[in-house]
Image (cartoon, rainbow, N blue to C red; front, side, top):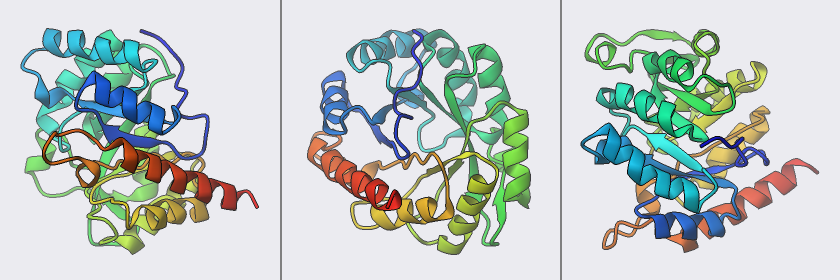
Length: 250
Protein backbone atom coordinates (compact mmCIF):
# COMPACT_ATOMS: atom_id res chain seq x y z
CA UNK A 1 0.00 0.00 0.00
CA UNK A 2 1.66 3.18 -1.18
CA UNK A 3 0.80 6.65 0.07
CA UNK A 4 3.17 9.53 0.68
CA UNK A 5 3.51 10.44 4.36
CA UNK A 6 0.85 12.96 5.38
CA UNK A 7 2.07 13.14 8.97
CA UNK A 8 4.93 15.31 7.72
CA UNK A 9 2.65 18.13 6.62
CA UNK A 10 3.44 19.96 9.85
CA UNK A 11 6.70 20.47 11.70
CA UNK A 12 5.73 18.22 14.63
CA UNK A 13 3.91 14.89 14.37
CA UNK A 14 3.01 12.42 17.10
CA UNK A 15 3.94 8.76 17.26
CA UNK A 16 1.80 6.76 19.69
CA UNK A 17 0.90 3.10 20.02
CA UNK A 18 -2.39 1.65 18.78
CA UNK A 19 -3.96 -1.22 20.70
CA UNK A 20 -6.65 -1.94 18.10
CA UNK A 21 -7.96 -0.59 14.81
CA UNK A 22 -10.66 1.29 16.71
CA UNK A 23 -8.09 2.80 19.07
CA UNK A 24 -5.96 3.80 16.06
CA UNK A 25 -8.94 5.53 14.44
CA UNK A 26 -9.76 7.43 17.65
CA UNK A 27 -6.18 8.65 18.08
CA UNK A 28 -5.87 9.53 14.40
CA UNK A 29 -8.96 11.70 14.66
CA UNK A 30 -7.83 13.24 17.97
CA UNK A 31 -4.63 14.48 16.32
CA UNK A 32 -6.46 15.50 13.14
CA UNK A 33 -4.29 13.14 11.10
CA UNK A 34 -1.02 14.67 12.25
CA UNK A 35 0.10 11.38 13.74
CA UNK A 36 1.40 7.91 13.01
CA UNK A 37 0.19 4.91 14.95
CA UNK A 38 2.79 2.44 16.09
CA UNK A 39 2.08 -1.28 15.71
CA UNK A 40 4.70 -3.53 17.25
CA UNK A 41 6.07 -6.45 15.23
CA UNK A 42 6.95 -8.14 18.51
CA UNK A 43 3.23 -8.73 19.12
CA UNK A 44 3.05 -11.20 16.22
CA UNK A 45 4.46 -14.69 15.88
CA UNK A 46 4.76 -14.73 12.08
CA UNK A 47 5.27 -12.27 9.23
CA UNK A 48 1.97 -13.31 7.66
CA UNK A 49 0.04 -12.66 10.86
CA UNK A 50 1.62 -9.22 11.21
CA UNK A 51 1.02 -8.27 7.57
CA UNK A 52 -2.61 -9.35 7.57
CA UNK A 53 -3.40 -7.47 10.78
CA UNK A 54 -1.47 -4.33 9.92
CA UNK A 55 -3.29 -4.08 6.59
CA UNK A 56 -6.50 -3.52 8.57
CA UNK A 57 -4.89 -0.54 10.28
CA UNK A 58 -3.64 0.80 6.95
CA UNK A 59 -7.13 0.80 5.48
CA UNK A 60 -8.63 2.51 8.53
CA UNK A 61 -6.14 5.38 8.90
CA UNK A 62 -4.82 6.15 5.42
CA UNK A 63 -1.66 4.08 5.91
CA UNK A 64 -0.54 6.30 8.82
CA UNK A 65 1.13 3.32 10.48
CA UNK A 66 4.54 3.02 12.05
CA UNK A 67 5.95 -0.50 12.02
CA UNK A 68 7.63 -0.88 15.40
CA UNK A 69 10.20 -3.15 16.96
CA UNK A 70 8.89 -3.41 20.52
CA UNK A 71 10.82 -1.49 23.18
CA UNK A 72 13.65 -1.10 20.68
CA UNK A 73 14.21 -4.87 20.59
CA UNK A 74 17.06 -5.50 18.11
CA UNK A 75 15.84 -9.06 17.68
CA UNK A 76 12.89 -7.67 15.71
CA UNK A 77 15.02 -5.82 13.17
CA UNK A 78 14.80 -8.36 10.34
CA UNK A 79 11.08 -8.96 10.82
CA UNK A 80 10.42 -5.22 10.66
CA UNK A 81 12.29 -5.01 7.36
CA UNK A 82 10.48 -7.99 5.85
CA UNK A 83 6.96 -6.93 6.75
CA UNK A 84 7.62 -3.30 5.84
CA UNK A 85 8.67 -4.39 2.34
CA UNK A 86 5.22 -5.91 1.92
CA UNK A 87 3.20 -3.22 3.69
CA UNK A 88 4.94 -0.06 2.41
CA UNK A 89 4.03 1.88 5.58
CA UNK A 90 4.55 5.60 6.10
CA UNK A 91 7.06 5.02 8.91
CA UNK A 92 9.50 2.33 10.03
CA UNK A 93 11.36 2.00 13.33
CA UNK A 94 14.79 0.42 13.09
CA UNK A 95 17.89 -0.24 15.11
CA UNK A 96 20.92 1.53 13.69
CA UNK A 97 22.24 -1.46 11.78
CA UNK A 98 18.85 -2.34 10.25
CA UNK A 99 18.29 0.91 8.35
CA UNK A 100 20.02 -0.11 5.11
CA UNK A 101 18.13 -3.40 4.90
CA UNK A 102 14.78 -1.69 5.39
CA UNK A 103 15.48 0.96 2.75
CA UNK A 104 16.70 -1.58 0.22
CA UNK A 105 13.65 -3.81 0.67
CA UNK A 106 11.21 -0.89 0.54
CA UNK A 107 12.60 0.12 -2.88
CA UNK A 108 11.43 3.73 -2.47
CA UNK A 109 12.45 6.90 -0.64
CA UNK A 110 9.08 8.11 0.69
CA UNK A 111 8.76 5.97 3.83
CA UNK A 112 10.44 7.54 6.85
CA UNK A 113 12.96 5.17 8.46
CA UNK A 114 14.53 6.07 11.77
CA UNK A 115 17.73 4.66 13.18
CA UNK A 116 17.99 4.04 16.93
CA UNK A 117 20.91 5.63 18.77
CA UNK A 118 21.26 5.87 22.53
CA UNK A 119 22.59 8.35 25.10
CA UNK A 120 26.17 7.78 26.27
CA UNK A 121 26.64 10.14 29.18
CA UNK A 122 28.82 12.33 26.93
CA UNK A 123 27.42 15.45 25.31
CA UNK A 124 27.77 15.25 21.53
CA UNK A 125 28.20 11.48 21.40
CA UNK A 126 25.70 8.64 20.84
CA UNK A 127 25.89 4.87 20.95
CA UNK A 128 25.21 3.31 17.55
CA UNK A 129 25.72 -0.32 18.68
CA UNK A 130 21.99 -1.01 18.86
CA UNK A 131 21.73 -4.00 16.49
CA UNK A 132 21.10 -7.68 17.33
CA UNK A 133 24.79 -8.50 17.81
CA UNK A 134 26.34 -5.08 18.40
CA UNK A 135 24.01 -4.31 21.31
CA UNK A 136 25.61 -7.23 23.16
CA UNK A 137 29.08 -5.71 22.82
CA UNK A 138 30.86 -2.65 24.18
CA UNK A 139 29.07 0.56 23.21
CA UNK A 140 30.19 2.19 19.95
CA UNK A 141 30.27 5.87 20.90
CA UNK A 142 30.56 8.23 17.94
CA UNK A 143 29.93 11.95 17.42
CA UNK A 144 26.27 12.58 16.68
CA UNK A 145 27.24 14.26 13.39
CA UNK A 146 28.99 11.05 12.29
CA UNK A 147 25.98 8.96 13.31
CA UNK A 148 23.71 11.15 11.17
CA UNK A 149 26.08 10.85 8.19
CA UNK A 150 26.10 7.06 8.58
CA UNK A 151 22.30 6.98 8.73
CA UNK A 152 22.13 9.08 5.56
CA UNK A 153 24.58 6.67 3.89
CA UNK A 154 22.18 3.82 4.68
CA UNK A 155 19.06 5.64 3.48
CA UNK A 156 17.78 6.66 6.89
CA UNK A 157 15.48 9.64 7.46
CA UNK A 158 15.79 10.41 11.15
CA UNK A 159 17.49 9.86 14.48
CA UNK A 160 15.46 7.92 17.04
CA UNK A 161 17.00 9.01 20.34
CA UNK A 162 16.19 6.25 22.86
CA UNK A 163 15.95 5.70 25.79
CA UNK A 164 15.79 9.37 26.79
CA UNK A 165 14.20 8.74 30.20
CA UNK A 166 12.37 12.02 29.84
CA UNK A 167 14.81 14.87 30.41
CA UNK A 168 17.47 12.77 32.16
CA UNK A 169 19.91 13.44 29.29
CA UNK A 170 18.82 17.00 28.59
CA UNK A 171 22.20 18.42 27.57
CA UNK A 172 22.95 15.42 25.37
CA UNK A 173 19.52 15.75 23.78
CA UNK A 174 20.16 19.43 23.04
CA UNK A 175 23.35 18.45 21.20
CA UNK A 176 21.48 15.82 19.20
CA UNK A 177 18.79 18.35 18.27
CA UNK A 178 21.43 20.88 17.19
CA UNK A 179 23.15 18.31 14.99
CA UNK A 180 19.87 17.23 13.38
CA UNK A 181 19.07 20.86 12.59
CA UNK A 182 22.50 21.56 11.14
CA UNK A 183 22.44 18.39 9.02
CA UNK A 184 18.85 18.66 7.77
CA UNK A 185 17.73 15.48 9.52
CA UNK A 186 14.55 14.51 11.35
CA UNK A 187 14.54 13.86 15.11
CA UNK A 188 12.44 11.37 17.05
CA UNK A 189 12.81 11.80 20.83
CA UNK A 190 11.68 8.61 22.56
CA UNK A 191 11.43 7.23 26.08
CA UNK A 192 9.88 8.60 29.25
CA UNK A 193 7.92 11.36 27.50
CA UNK A 194 4.67 12.33 29.22
CA UNK A 195 2.13 15.13 29.43
CA UNK A 196 4.34 17.04 31.85
CA UNK A 197 7.66 17.06 29.97
CA UNK A 198 6.32 16.85 26.40
CA UNK A 199 6.28 20.59 25.75
CA UNK A 200 9.85 21.17 26.96
CA UNK A 201 11.14 18.24 24.91
CA UNK A 202 9.61 19.44 21.64
CA UNK A 203 10.47 23.07 22.43
CA UNK A 204 14.16 22.15 22.71
CA UNK A 205 14.04 20.64 19.23
CA UNK A 206 12.14 23.62 17.80
CA UNK A 207 14.57 26.09 19.39
CA UNK A 208 17.48 24.15 17.89
CA UNK A 209 15.93 24.56 14.45
CA UNK A 210 14.94 20.95 13.72
CA UNK A 211 12.58 20.99 10.74
CA UNK A 212 10.72 17.70 11.42
CA UNK A 213 10.15 16.39 14.95
CA UNK A 214 8.36 13.13 15.73
CA UNK A 215 8.08 12.60 19.50
CA UNK A 216 7.13 9.08 20.60
CA UNK A 217 4.73 9.10 23.56
CA UNK A 218 3.93 5.61 24.74
CA UNK A 219 3.24 4.13 28.16
CA UNK A 220 2.45 7.42 29.92
CA UNK A 221 -0.76 7.86 27.88
CA UNK A 222 -1.87 4.22 27.82
CA UNK A 223 -4.83 3.18 29.95
CA UNK A 224 -3.44 0.33 32.13
CA UNK A 225 -6.85 -1.34 32.31
CA UNK A 226 -7.65 -1.48 28.60
CA UNK A 227 -4.21 -1.16 27.00
CA UNK A 228 -5.59 1.60 24.78
CA UNK A 229 -3.81 4.87 24.13
CA UNK A 230 -6.13 7.52 25.55
CA UNK A 231 -7.52 9.71 22.73
CA UNK A 232 -8.13 12.56 25.18
CA UNK A 233 -4.40 12.58 26.01
CA UNK A 234 -3.55 12.56 22.30
CA UNK A 235 -5.84 15.56 21.90
CA UNK A 236 -4.00 17.35 24.72
CA UNK A 237 -0.60 16.58 23.19
CA UNK A 238 -1.83 17.77 19.81
CA UNK A 239 -2.96 21.03 21.39
CA UNK A 240 0.53 21.53 22.87
CA UNK A 241 2.09 20.82 19.47
CA UNK A 242 -0.12 23.41 17.81
CA UNK A 243 0.78 26.01 20.43
CA UNK A 244 4.52 25.37 20.11
CA UNK A 245 4.34 25.48 16.31
CA UNK A 246 2.32 28.68 16.35
CA UNK A 247 4.74 30.39 18.73
CA UNK A 248 7.72 29.28 16.64
CA UNK A 249 6.31 31.09 13.60
CA UNK A 250 6.02 34.46 15.39
